[in-house]
Image (cartoon, rainbow, N blue to C red; front, side, top):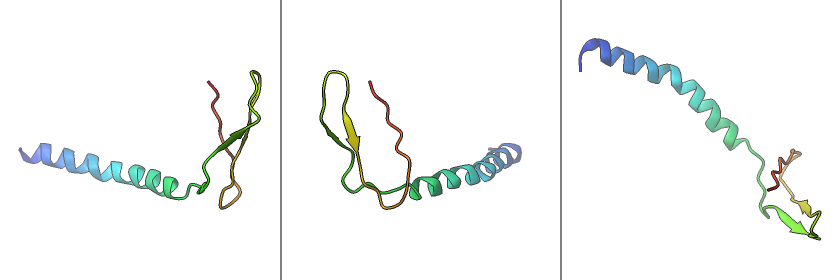
Length: 64
């Protein structure tokens, strides 16, 4: 490894670290759902979904 490769590798890691840390902090700030997501009253055309979290939050649901 020469000096140029070392500096390029070090610089790319230095500039990538803030992006990685912000993602880690965002994930740790996510609401906690101790009971998970509950499902009930399922019919061929609908289902009731609910959950409880430790603070106000928005639940994004993908149905497939």
